[in-house]
Length: 485
Image (cartoon, rainbow, N blue to C red; front, side, top):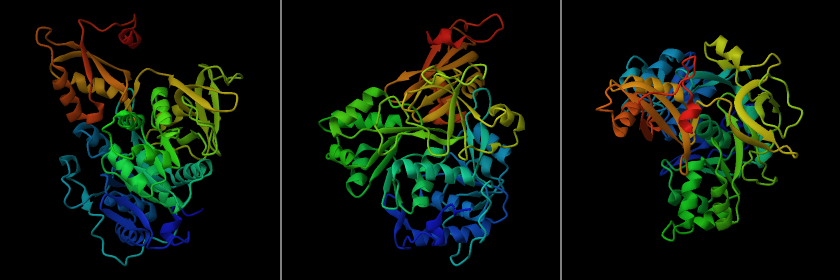
């Protein structure tokens, strides 16, 4: 098996003094990252699973790299997750250690775990020498379920390697590239693509900490070659380009980047065109999921085309199927995307039934996304097979868990959650509530704060409608399409 992170094993020719990661004023060279991660890996070897308090800091990078080098599955935790969701993830994944800075205040749900600071391990220790097998679990990333609590997707080492190598081929990604982004480090986009991607190539990453057009301009003008973002970020960049008082030289910065890449949700055509008109540079898109990592992507030498996510990446088999599972002969027809390849996850942690339901008999993963395919192989995603997955601000959010949280509020008798188009977020979360007391319905801010406390801030409803009753069919199921209309 090829080393997952060759530069950290001295196998890529990358000098130890080269910068690996930078977070504002804090940076780590390849030599220092190898030393720190080796020392921590020696301490967590054999730990079973480790939780990583995934802040946007060098400590998170050290923690994840140490887990990979020790062959211990890491569970990235969103620091803004609410108590209920965090408790579920910890019970489900059962980590024995949490990797977090000594100065970080952790929630009570983590009190029972042994805590190690990634920055305090004594140097000189050697990480376990043998590279784990390709199918060994590397990360367990939790996904939002549409009808219940999140499930842990087990991502093996071969899936990470396969996806990153396919992107190297598609994007001509090299050790000379300097990636700029401000994505959180607890999911696939920010952590695997945004951190492990540069480290696998021997390149470097500059994390902005908090997204801003000023930060993007600064880093791209000082050596950055690639920008990763979600549609919300590109919408704000487009707005800054239109603003005469926007950050100076942003146009020059974006025009000079080798690649501008958007993912996690569809980038509106309007924002595509605004950025292209102002900079002469087109944003390219790719398509992936937690369970499959990357499936498609517009190539660096391909034709950027608004509304498409490019052709399948190297090694990925992609097909469209009818509702009954019949493979579509005409790719211009709309069908569900199914994929197969080394990029696909092993399964859901301790959920054999859910894992079996996610795959076809011949090994294709059912994505639930609907699409068409252009004659030249470019995929156009048109929506979800179900109506209960909302893409907002780059996050995929399940309506079911928000509904359950709303129903925990004493002022809510019934609740349904949908998404509606939003020019900034892509989609905003809309709650449809039947109040327990129609004379004193809970307010929008009150319900938003309630959901944020239980789940996470990005899962709060942005709009609340009060109804006398929810529309239901003869079986009692809420007819969400009626709500949307």
